[in-house]
Amino acid sequence: MNEGLYAIGLCAVAVNAATGVLEAGRKPIDLFGMVVVALAAALGGGTLRDLLLDRPVFWIVDPSYLWAAVAAGLTTFVLVRRLRLPLNLFLIPDALGLALFTVLGTQIALGMGADGFVASVMGVITGVFGGVLRDVLCNEVPLVFGGELYATAAWAGALLLVALNHFGVAPNASAALAIAAVLALRLAAIRWRIRLPIFVARR
Image 1 (tube, rainbow, N blue to C red):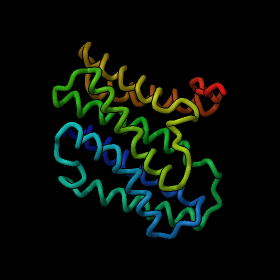
Image 2: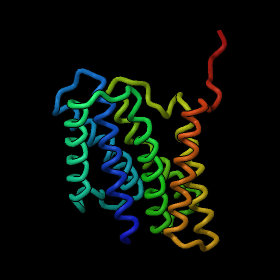
Image 3: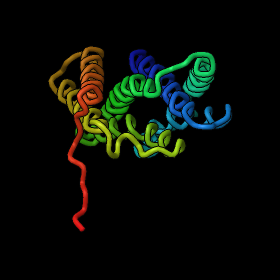
Protein backbone atom coordinates (compact mmCIF):
# COMPACT_ATOMS: atom_id res chain seq x y z
CA MET A 1 0.00 0.00 0.00
CA ASN A 2 1.39 3.41 -0.94
CA GLU A 3 1.95 6.13 1.63
CA GLY A 4 -1.11 8.12 0.54
CA LEU A 5 -3.48 5.18 1.03
CA TYR A 6 -1.83 4.31 4.34
CA ALA A 7 -2.30 7.84 5.65
CA ILE A 8 -5.94 7.90 4.51
CA GLY A 9 -6.51 4.58 6.25
CA LEU A 10 -5.05 5.69 9.58
CA CYS A 11 -7.01 8.97 9.49
CA ALA A 12 -10.23 7.14 8.62
CA VAL A 13 -9.79 4.67 11.48
CA ALA A 14 -9.08 7.43 14.00
CA VAL A 15 -12.00 9.59 12.87
CA ASN A 16 -14.49 6.73 12.89
CA ALA A 17 -13.32 5.59 16.33
CA ALA A 18 -14.00 9.13 17.57
CA THR A 19 -17.52 9.08 16.06
CA GLY A 20 -18.20 5.81 17.84
CA VAL A 21 -17.34 7.35 21.21
CA LEU A 22 -19.25 10.56 20.46
CA GLU A 23 -22.42 8.62 19.73
CA ALA A 24 -21.91 6.13 22.54
CA GLY A 25 -21.41 9.10 24.89
CA ARG A 26 -25.12 9.87 24.54
CA LYS A 27 -25.93 6.48 26.09
CA PRO A 28 -25.25 5.01 29.55
CA ILE A 29 -22.26 3.00 28.29
CA ASP A 30 -19.09 2.41 30.31
CA LEU A 31 -15.48 2.74 29.12
CA PHE A 32 -15.26 -0.85 27.86
CA GLY A 33 -18.50 -0.45 25.94
CA MET A 34 -17.24 2.76 24.35
CA VAL A 35 -14.04 1.05 23.24
CA VAL A 36 -16.09 -1.75 21.67
CA VAL A 37 -18.27 0.77 19.82
CA ALA A 38 -15.19 2.73 18.72
CA LEU A 39 -13.49 -0.39 17.35
CA ALA A 40 -16.64 -1.53 15.56
CA ALA A 41 -17.04 1.87 13.92
CA ALA A 42 -13.38 2.14 12.99
CA LEU A 43 -12.66 -1.39 11.78
CA GLY A 44 -16.00 -2.87 10.72
CA GLY A 45 -16.22 -1.57 7.16
CA GLY A 46 -12.64 -2.39 6.24
CA THR A 47 -12.92 -5.84 7.78
CA LEU A 48 -16.00 -6.71 5.71
CA ARG A 49 -14.32 -5.32 2.58
CA ASP A 50 -11.23 -7.45 3.11
CA LEU A 51 -13.28 -10.59 3.71
CA LEU A 52 -15.29 -9.99 0.52
CA LEU A 53 -12.14 -9.31 -1.51
CA ASP A 54 -10.42 -12.37 0.01
CA ARG A 55 -7.46 -10.35 1.26
CA PRO A 56 -5.83 -10.37 4.72
CA VAL A 57 -7.79 -8.25 7.20
CA PHE A 58 -5.99 -4.92 7.33
CA TRP A 59 -5.78 -4.41 11.09
CA ILE A 60 -4.53 -7.95 11.70
CA VAL A 61 -1.74 -7.50 9.14
CA ASP A 62 -0.84 -4.07 10.53
CA PRO A 63 -1.84 -3.53 14.20
CA SER A 64 -1.11 0.19 13.80
CA TYR A 65 -4.71 0.57 12.68
CA LEU A 66 -5.94 -1.13 15.85
CA TRP A 67 -3.76 1.09 18.04
CA ALA A 68 -4.90 4.19 16.16
CA ALA A 69 -8.54 3.25 16.81
CA VAL A 70 -7.95 2.59 20.51
CA ALA A 71 -5.94 5.80 20.98
CA ALA A 72 -8.52 7.94 19.17
CA GLY A 73 -11.36 6.30 21.09
CA LEU A 74 -9.75 6.80 24.50
CA THR A 75 -8.76 10.39 23.71
CA THR A 76 -12.30 11.20 22.62
CA PHE A 77 -13.67 9.49 25.75
CA VAL A 78 -11.56 11.78 27.95
CA LEU A 79 -12.69 14.87 26.04
CA VAL A 80 -16.35 13.87 26.16
CA ARG A 81 -16.17 13.50 29.94
CA ARG A 82 -14.56 16.93 30.41
CA LEU A 83 -16.35 19.05 27.81
CA ARG A 84 -20.01 19.74 27.09
CA LEU A 85 -20.40 18.84 23.43
CA PRO A 86 -23.36 19.33 21.03
CA LEU A 87 -25.56 16.24 20.78
CA ASN A 88 -25.06 15.81 17.03
CA LEU A 89 -21.37 16.68 16.95
CA PHE A 90 -20.55 13.16 15.75
CA LEU A 91 -22.23 13.87 12.37
CA ILE A 92 -19.34 16.04 11.18
CA PRO A 93 -16.45 13.61 11.89
CA ASP A 94 -18.76 10.84 10.68
CA ALA A 95 -19.03 12.61 7.31
CA LEU A 96 -15.24 12.86 7.13
CA GLY A 97 -14.82 9.20 8.09
CA LEU A 98 -17.38 8.23 5.44
CA ALA A 99 -15.41 10.13 2.78
CA LEU A 100 -12.03 8.74 3.80
CA PHE A 101 -13.15 5.13 4.08
CA THR A 102 -15.13 5.25 0.82
CA VAL A 103 -12.10 6.44 -1.14
CA LEU A 104 -9.80 4.00 0.63
CA GLY A 105 -12.07 1.02 -0.07
CA THR A 106 -12.53 1.97 -3.72
CA GLN A 107 -8.80 2.45 -4.30
CA ILE A 108 -7.93 -0.86 -2.64
CA ALA A 109 -10.46 -2.72 -4.80
CA LEU A 110 -9.20 -0.99 -7.95
CA GLY A 111 -5.63 -1.87 -6.97
CA MET A 112 -6.65 -5.53 -6.80
CA GLY A 113 -7.96 -5.36 -10.35
CA ALA A 114 -11.66 -5.28 -9.48
CA ASP A 115 -14.18 -4.02 -12.01
CA GLY A 116 -14.97 -0.32 -11.57
CA PHE A 117 -18.56 -0.94 -10.51
CA VAL A 118 -17.50 -3.62 -8.04
CA ALA A 119 -14.80 -1.29 -6.69
CA SER A 120 -17.39 1.44 -6.10
CA VAL A 121 -19.56 -1.02 -4.14
CA MET A 122 -16.52 -2.01 -2.06
CA GLY A 123 -15.98 1.68 -1.36
CA VAL A 124 -19.54 2.10 -0.14
CA ILE A 125 -19.29 -0.99 2.05
CA THR A 126 -16.03 0.27 3.55
CA GLY A 127 -17.57 3.67 4.15
CA VAL A 128 -20.90 2.75 5.69
CA PHE A 129 -20.63 -0.61 7.44
CA GLY A 130 -18.68 0.63 10.46
CA GLY A 131 -21.33 3.29 11.01
CA VAL A 132 -24.06 0.65 10.79
CA LEU A 133 -22.36 -1.42 13.50
CA ARG A 134 -21.88 1.70 15.65
CA ASP A 135 -25.54 2.69 15.40
CA VAL A 136 -26.81 -0.84 16.06
CA LEU A 137 -24.59 -1.19 19.14
CA CYS A 138 -25.92 2.17 20.37
CA ASN A 139 -29.51 1.06 19.75
CA GLU A 140 -30.11 3.65 17.03
CA VAL A 141 -31.58 3.30 13.55
CA PRO A 142 -28.49 3.34 11.29
CA LEU A 143 -28.03 6.66 9.48
CA VAL A 144 -27.68 4.82 6.20
CA PHE A 145 -31.25 3.45 6.41
CA GLY A 146 -33.34 6.60 6.63
CA GLY A 147 -31.48 9.82 7.28
CA GLU A 148 -30.05 12.41 4.95
CA LEU A 149 -27.98 11.21 1.96
CA TYR A 150 -25.35 8.82 3.28
CA ALA A 151 -24.63 5.76 1.17
CA THR A 152 -25.70 7.78 -1.88
CA ALA A 153 -23.04 10.39 -1.13
CA ALA A 154 -20.47 7.63 -0.66
CA TRP A 155 -21.42 5.93 -3.92
CA ALA A 156 -21.27 9.19 -5.87
CA GLY A 157 -17.74 9.79 -4.57
CA ALA A 158 -16.71 6.21 -5.30
CA LEU A 159 -18.01 6.42 -8.88
CA LEU A 160 -16.20 9.74 -9.32
CA LEU A 161 -12.97 8.11 -8.17
CA VAL A 162 -13.47 5.22 -10.61
CA ALA A 163 -14.07 7.69 -13.45
CA LEU A 164 -11.02 9.78 -12.59
CA ASN A 165 -8.91 6.63 -12.40
CA HIS A 166 -10.24 5.54 -15.81
CA PHE A 167 -9.19 8.85 -17.37
CA GLY A 168 -5.69 8.64 -15.91
CA VAL A 169 -5.91 11.35 -13.26
CA ALA A 170 -3.08 11.12 -10.71
CA PRO A 171 -4.04 8.90 -7.75
CA ASN A 172 -3.50 11.55 -5.06
CA ALA A 173 -5.48 14.15 -7.00
CA SER A 174 -8.35 11.77 -7.74
CA ALA A 175 -8.46 10.69 -4.09
CA ALA A 176 -8.58 14.31 -2.89
CA LEU A 177 -11.38 15.18 -5.35
CA ALA A 178 -13.42 12.11 -4.39
CA ILE A 179 -13.00 12.78 -0.66
CA ALA A 180 -14.11 16.37 -1.18
CA ALA A 181 -17.13 15.22 -3.20
CA VAL A 182 -18.36 12.75 -0.56
CA LEU A 183 -17.78 15.23 2.25
CA ALA A 184 -19.53 18.07 0.41
CA LEU A 185 -22.54 15.93 -0.50
CA ARG A 186 -22.92 14.53 3.00
CA LEU A 187 -22.57 17.92 4.74
CA ALA A 188 -24.96 19.55 2.25
CA ALA A 189 -27.47 16.76 2.90
CA ILE A 190 -27.21 17.36 6.65
CA ARG A 191 -27.49 21.14 6.27
CA TRP A 192 -30.48 21.14 3.94
CA ARG A 193 -31.99 17.78 4.96
CA ILE A 194 -31.63 16.23 1.52
CA ARG A 195 -32.78 12.63 1.53
CA LEU A 196 -34.10 9.93 -0.73
CA PRO A 197 -37.85 9.19 -0.71
CA ILE A 198 -38.85 7.03 2.25
CA PHE A 199 -40.87 3.93 1.48
CA VAL A 200 -44.13 3.63 3.40
CA ALA A 201 -46.34 0.62 2.63
CA ARG A 202 -49.99 1.29 1.93
CA ARG A 203 -52.41 -0.27 4.36
